[in-house]
Length: 173
Image 1 (cartoon, rainbow, N blue to C red):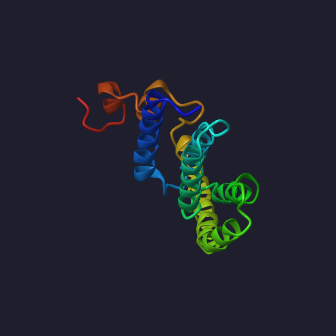
Image 2: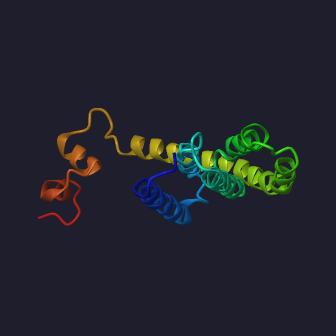
């Protein structure tokens, strides 16, 4: 049974939303899950009882998404490539010639993206480790020493107000 016009319209609206989102953030290191959701969305399109045109449209769209996604150095680019390879090798009918050709064409782009993804991951983890260490140092600096008086706590802990200012002897009065 062919897809209804209403269902087609809703599907087209979702495609437009995915495309708009991916245009803005699709190359971001953390955007892999969005790519996977887009693939899953298209995979759910009717294909068992679909017309040959609808099945071809679904196949063309999945290739488009995979081929674009594997060129970006996103965190899960290797997972996207594995899914794309599986799709071309096992999910597309009569694909013995074209599938391997397409995989060969996109493999160098994927390899570059994968290498950049590993570099980004290392930088990302390094930045996060540095931020965590800085937060730890700042947290230790902000704790008043044991046995400090209440006025010292206000100055050290940022209790503010005139009491904190006068207790520290700065601008008091």
